[in-house]
Image 1 (cartoon, helix red, strand yellow):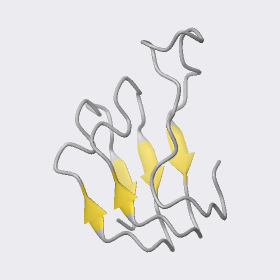
Image 2 (image 1 turned 90 degrees about the horizontal axis):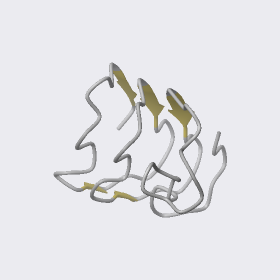
Image 3 (image 1 turned 120 degrees about the vertical axis):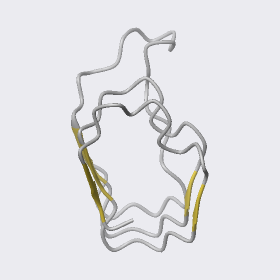
Image 4 (image 1 turned 90 degrees about the vertical axis):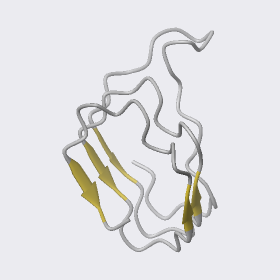
Length: 79
C-alpha cells in the first residue's frame, strides 16, 4: 500500500520486464490520501490489478494510456 504518499505520480512498480525478476502477484493497490496529480502512460503495464483506489488525491491529469493492458481491472475508486 502507498498510503499518505507525497508523490505527484504513480510510483514505478516492478514488472515482468524488470531485471529484478517477476513482479509479485498484486491484485489490489491503494494509493490514498496523497498528493498524486498525474497518472502517467502505462503506469500499470504488465500487472494484473483488479482494484485500484486513488481516493483523496489531487489527480488533475490521466494519460489516455494510463490503464492500458489492465484487462482484469474491475474496480477503479475515486479517480
